[in-house]
Image (cartoon, rainbow, N blue to C red; front, side, top):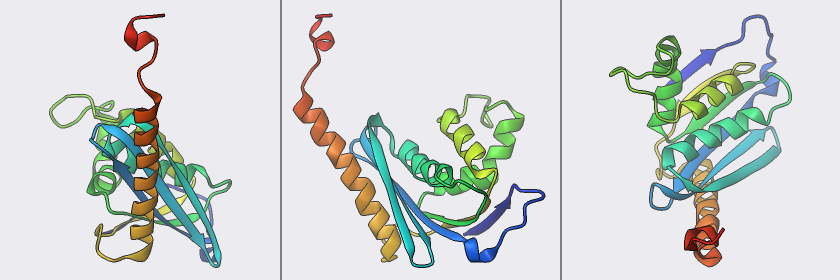
Length: 175
């Protein structure tokens, strides 16, 4: 699925500046500890962004991979963003405009899950000319495989941190 979303109106983009981005999210448990990763490539330059949360969902981490990548750019750029998340692809290319019109309500009138992250992604994409591309996960695409491994490693770091930290004083009833 290759979908271009042009949210820019008067910016002229130089295709030589195009950045290719691979993102992924991972969650152990869902909800549970999670991680995200974004691999940014332009020519011979490469940058990896990664992070996570102790208590999150897989969809939230998938969104964060794309958000962090787009927020990292300091100027408007043409971007090709690959994700293996149907949730991200469909949300940003098919559903988001309706959500904005309905004040972040879904088709059944209920609040959109992760509306805060969708709003952040919507804002992050605005200065750029983003082409959204879906890539099948675990299909042998080397960059998708690397993004998956990085995201899982971030989730695993947080799982270990949660296990070793133990309960807080508040969790024992001491403040």
